[in-house]
Amino acid sequence: MERMDQGGANEKLDALFAQYREACPDREASASFMPRLWERIEARRSAVSSSWFRLWAEVWLLATLAVAIVIGGVLIPRFENPPAYQASYVDVLTAADSANEVAALPIGETE
Amino acid sequence: MLIEFELIEKAKNGDEGAFNQVVQAYRKRILGTIARLIGKPEDVEDVGQEVFLRLYFSLDQLRAAEVFEPWLYRLTVNAAYDYLRRQKRRHEHRMSDLSEQQVMMADASAGGKQQAEEDRRTKVREMVQSLLGKVSEEDRILLMMKEVEGLSLKELEQIYKVNENALKVRLFRARQRVLKAFEGQD
Image (cartoon, rainbow over all chains, first blue to last red; front, side, top):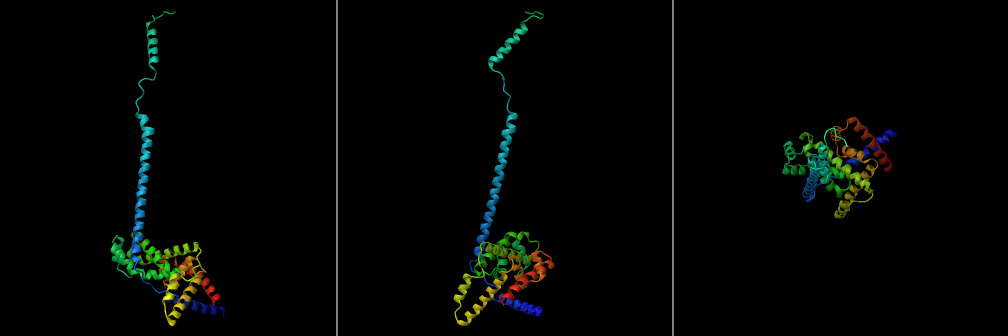
């Protein structure tokens, strides 16, 4: 009995869906449909291309920074000329003088 | 198919004129389907434009022109689903109030008989929308595609990319839930 009732309800539900289909027929688009669609396509297109541009700009910026770090941190110190003199002028003179003194002492002579 | 495969291939290759022709051939059917899926006439064109917008940007991923219709229906189902989820998030009571367009249509239809017919249609729309409110957005759309749009299980399988048995189970459960609500109203 219950099964029969459900069968009846099933049929009624099918009929309701059919009525719904008829109550919501296919509809024509308004005159602004196509222009609005193309506006949205253009807007999306420019958003996509500007995001690509931004991505490229970011990539280039990062690459430039990386190159600057490599040049500044590794290459410049490596190619930098070593200083001609490590000591001051006075130190050099003193060192030269003491070397002369050692040379002037006769061999085997002690003070 | 409403159009030649060649036209789809042209649209796929970036021919904007061909794309316009594709939209013009399918928009009436797609707008009708969306109207029945979402039950908000004033938002139908917006969702319809979203479908064709997605079509424009995904056409290059279409494997073959032969599967164009299931592809388009898939985009329609997804756009309608996204819309329904957004509506749910906004806590709108879509079943309770009459939409703007329904009110306008009711106002515009003069005369007793015409008015009575429009009232009957409005009642049917509200009743079905209220029943569909008893199931999830996914099941609501699936049920509509089967029961109202009249798509076969094979076609639904192509759209949802889910096997037929899983679809049958899901449809059966959704229908039972709607049927229970329907019997409760009766």
